[in-house]
Image 1 (spheres, each protein chain N blue to C red):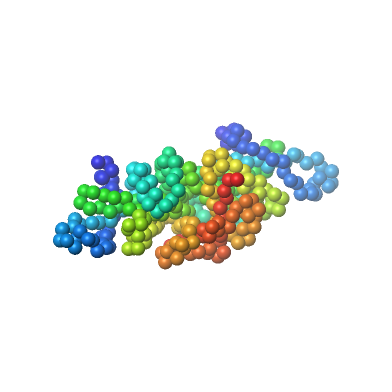
Image 2 (image 1 turned 135 degrees about the vertical axis):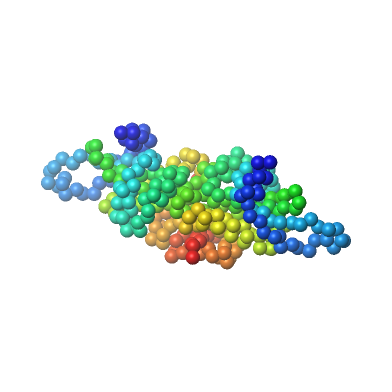
Length: 170
Length: 170
């Protein structure tokens, strides 16, 4: 109950861009669907794992996922809400020094909900929240196939030749 | 006094690679110099600002610098210690989710102490500390002139085409 309270108090919602629904076609009155965003971090980790499985990410230990969520500066979840039912359909989080820099990680939209502007809405919500905290330098590391997606949102690739670099253990 | 206690209890030291010292040349016995690392975050912010000024960085509000240090996962300072005197000669910090990712920011070595392997020692100390916390994905954003420096430390540029991207407010 605390969850719902905080979901509604902390969240914004947008109308869902609906795909044609076969249920509608046979005349059943569809329940209104909304997309709701939340910054609540008390997520069901199994539901989050299911979302990440759906896009084919490697599984990660839930103990570490929990720790990462607890220690992220911002956690954003995106839900499809239909009456009293809700389904987790997107997620993003950011680490930060709470002052200058934030780095966005783990941006995911469920494949059933892709290609209808929800990734963009998720990112815009995330950027708005970070800007609301006066973070000016917002960064991320983009896989090659999503570079253009982030570019359209205003992200700049290698600005002034600044390069993303990774160090992995041997 | 608490500072010194924690400096010595938390720190490691390495022998300073010395440049030829004109004082030595005239026969004055130099005091032994050591380079000491610390993860203590109670730093004198004016001393840190002086270090950043020395490399020509834009000044930042100390209130925000303090907040950023408090909310960094790791803060590393590098000191030249000569008898009871110490001088701040290097700095680095990292944000993290304490589980998967860390991002290193604000790596600086005082110009008087550059080109003698101290930047490398500072980074190796930072990497060791992050690895000690079981962080496996260590990232940074490198200015073009230091890409090769980080490459020699084992950092990989754009691995598998992953690109660093930045978003700035309008």
